[in-house]
Length: 81
Image (cartoon, rainbow, N blue to C red; front, side, top):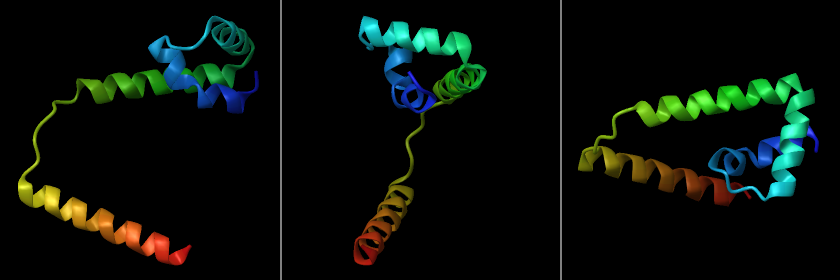
């Protein structure tokens, strides 16, 4: 397993949904790669921090502004293609 592959399956690894062979390869790679181990820890801490945030409803006005913004971005990005 190479570093690029590690980053593509990190969510599956953390959720425990990787197959046993890939999980074993993942753990073997982490054992020898400090960069991926640091990436995993940073990713794990980020997920924990986000989960600890309170979940609040946004106002209808804010929701509409976000939706209009995203629609404009999608429209402009599809025109540029």
